[in-house]
Image 1: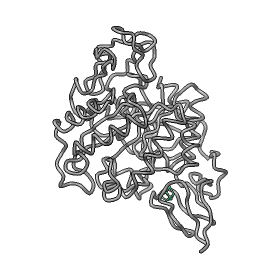
Image 2: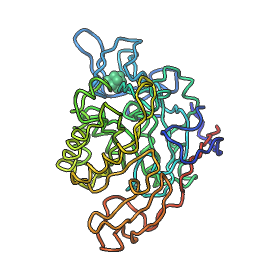
Image 3: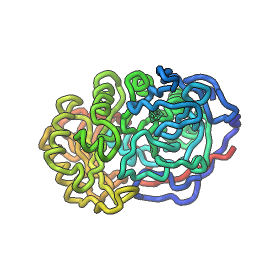
Image 4: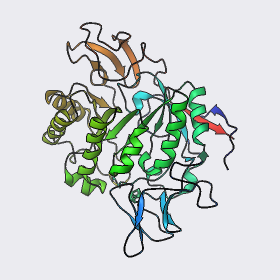
Length: 395
Ligand code: SF4
C-alpha cells in the first residue's frame, strides 16, 4: 500500500519557456472497484464486457480491444486479468512538474496560475508525430518512477499553491479511474482539474470522466478522417462526439489545440472547414491554439512548422468567426495575446507563457468596452510566470 505520509521538494532542471509538454525528470480504492492483483498499482475497471468467443472487450475507448487473459490493450496500461479489464498504472506517474497553466495550453482558465502536472504511460492513439512518445509509447514501467495516491497529489497541489492539477503528458482517458479519484480528492481541497486529452473515449466513460473535470484542452489533430486514420490510428467522428458532448452537456471550460504538420494537416481549406465546424457546433468563444510540430518519433523527415503557417492558420480561424485564435510553441506576442472580441482591444498580453499587460476588470470584463470575456478568471492575474519546476514527492 502507498504510504499516506508524503513530503515534496523542488526537483532539478527548472526549464523556463521550454517547448513540448513533458516533465523535466522521469523519475486506492479506485472508482472502478478494489484491487484484483497483489500489484498495488492494478485495479479493477467497469467498462468492459465478455464477447461470444470468450474474450473480454474493453469499452473505454473506440478501439474496443478484445483481449484474452494476459494480453494488454493498445494503450498498454489496460489489460485482461482474471477475465476482466484492469488498469495497471493506478497511482503511478512519469513525474510531477509545476507549469504555467498557459502551457497546457489554456489561455482562458485562470491565466498566470500554476498547475501541478503529471502523467502516466501509454496512449490509445498511435500518432506518428507524437511529441511525447517516450511516455505515451513507453512499454517500460520504469518510466513510471514516481507514485502518489489521489489524496497525496491533492495535498501536494494545495501546499504548492497550485490552482489546478493537470492530467497531461499522456492521455488521461486511459487512466480513467486514477484521474477521476485524483480529481475528486482535488475538488475536496478546492483545487481544479484539467484534462489534456485527444478526446478518444466512448460515450459512457466520457460522461463519467468529464463530470469530474473543470477544464479540458482537447487535441483536434486534423479535420479529415484520412488524417486521423492514416496518421493517428483513430477516427475523427469519435473526437467530434466528445467535443459536442463537452460543449453542450457540461460546464467544463474547453479549448482546442491543433499541431500543424507541414503537408499533412496545414491546408488552409482544411483549417477553415475545422474552424467553421467549431463556430457552428461549439460556438465562436472556444479558443483554438495552432502549435508548431518538430520532427519526432516516426516523422523525423518532416520539417518543423514555419511560423508563417501558424500565423496563417490563426488568420483563417479569425476570418472564420473564431473569437480567440492563438499561435503556440513560438515567440509571437501578437498571436499569443488575447483581444476583446467586441472592441478588439488587447486585454491579456502574452509572450510565450509570460503575461504582460492585463486589461480585464475583476469580473473578467474588458476595461474598454465592458464585454465579458469567455473563460474563468480570478479578479487578478496569477503571478506564476513562465517557470517550470519539477517536483519530487518523497514517501
Ligand atoms: S482503453 Fe486501451 S484497452 Fe481499452 S479499448 Fe482503448 S486502447 Fe484498448
